Every structure is written in C-alpha cells, then in structure tokens.
Image (tube, rainbow, N blue to C red):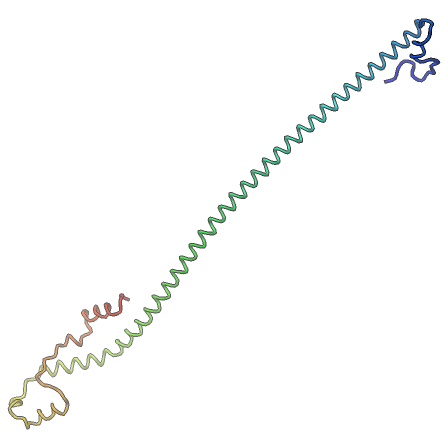
Length: 199
C-alpha cells in the first residue's frame, strides 16, 4: 500500500523535519501524518495476511493431523481384519488337515479290511469248489449207514466181507455223525466264527 506522496520526490525526510530547529509547517505535519497512517495501514494489512496465513497453515496442519490419524486408524483396521482373516484361514487349514488325516486313516482301515475279505473270499471259493466232493462223501456215508449188518460177520473171521473191511481199513459198525461233515447253517456259523467277521 503506497502513501499519497508515492512517486513524488521528497526534499526532506521525517527525521530531517524533526531535527530542524524551525517548527514543521502544516503541510509537513499533514504529510507526516499521512505517512504514518500509510505505515499503520500497511502493518495492519500485513498482520491480517499473517493471521490469515497462520489460520491457513494451522487449518492445514490440523487437516493433515486428522488425515494422518484417519489413515493410521484405517491401516490398523486393515491389519486387524487381515489378522482375523489369516487366523480364520489357519483354523480352516488345520481343520482340513485333520479331516484329511482322518480320511487317510479310514482308507488304510478299508484297505486292510479289503485284504482280509479278499483272503476270506478265496477260502470260501475253495470251500464251494469242494462242496460236491463233500456232498458225495456224505451221500456214500448215509447210504452205508442204511445198509443192514451182515449176518455172521463177527463170528466168521474168514468171511469175504471181513477180509474186505480189513483191506480197506474200514470199520463197519462205526457210528458216523453226518453233522460232522455237513456244511449247513451250523457249520456256516462256525465258519463265520473262524473267519472273525461275517461277509
């Protein structure tokens, strides 16, 4: 802000007017007052600008502080969220590993059971293949039991039937129980007990 005499050459200054022995003229007093008023206005304007700048800087500083706090809070929230997510994923991973281990144990048990059942199946196949021979043997034994005893077989040692029995190592009067050779329900139950489990 420029004074009213800005741009005009001044022959004296304020100090020269104050140091002069002669009293200042009214014109000099007016010029001095105008100069002081201009300086006061300039100072007031600078103070206003300085206050405005300080308010601006203070506002910007507060805004930056708020933004920094908000960013810190946001980062903290993201970190906590990520930590919770990681913890949840770790729990799921641990649960999946435990479930996978249980499945592996079940598979091993099933493999062992399959091996046992395969062996028992082979045994049952062999028994089924031998069934006709056993049936024929039982039929022959039943037919032999139904035959009437030979008269005089015990008194006549030289009889042909007695000699035939000796040659074949058979005892005619031996009472055989067909249940010992039967593959009925009782024998099947005993087979189940022998094999350990039912198929």
